[in-house]
Image (cartoon, rainbow, N blue to C red; front, side, top):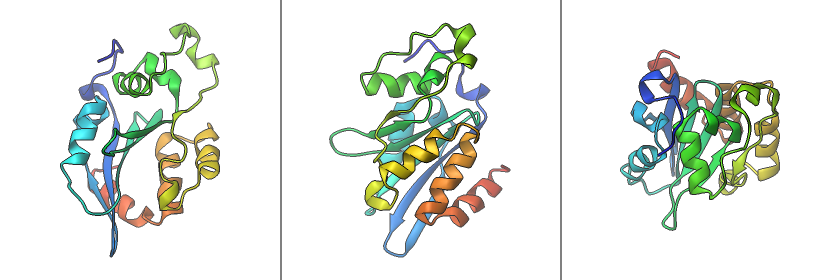
Length: 171
């Protein structure tokens, strides 16, 4: 676990599980602990035991997002902003899992550094979101994380299901 400052009680955002079934998409909210620790998010996703594809979308403080896709050999991961690991445990967890060092950036200068993604841009390619399109979404730093996740949901066809869950969460 990291040394970052944020804990789940301090984090705003949302964590949802997305399941692709034969009949369409199902989106369910995850417990808030998924925003604090990668292991917690993975555990919640594995407990769904769905037949279709399962992945998690984690919007952390509207600052960055994480996509978690459990797999037998270990989760496939995408972190939208590696510099977030300076402030957030879950981002540090993702980099650790990816065997990527936390960026050597002075925390006072982090706002002056352009964010970059780490992980698997093709994490959702088999579901219809190619890595080049994901790269464009992640690279649009003018958007908040929830807007980027909304674009992903729209491209894959579960925007309405996501909107319903977010409405239920008061977002």
